[in-house]
Image 1 (cartoon, rainbow, N blue to C red):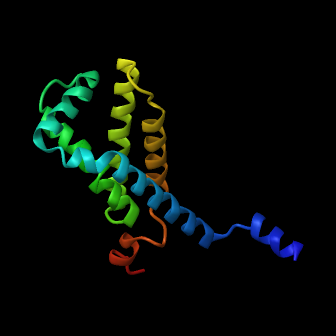
Image 2 (cartoon, one colour; image 1 turned 90 degrees about the vertical axis):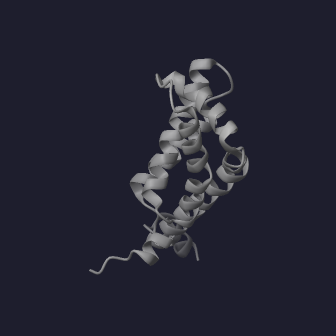
Length: 147
């Protein structure tokens, strides 16, 4: 019995990695969509303009605020859903990483709020971008390459 537990705890379980990636993807998607993305997406053009105007000047960008706010809202809602489902995974993870880095930068530059959560999302998304979605993803099912 102890040997089985040791084997489980200290073995290189490939299937465990895929389950771990699934849990991480679904957790990020659920938290991002419900706490951040959906409300920004449903704010509409006025809300997107305010969102863009709030964050982009700290990156030296002083135009197209509505566009940048819309992209942030899309990446935090639709992009997060794509991460959870593992669909168009790497583009979605890339967009969320960039959006969260911009958000963290805004918090740091203004001194308003804590950049910690944005940095956690950015680092998690960047790590997922590099690792990939794992076996339990729609990308794997739909775009399976013929080897």
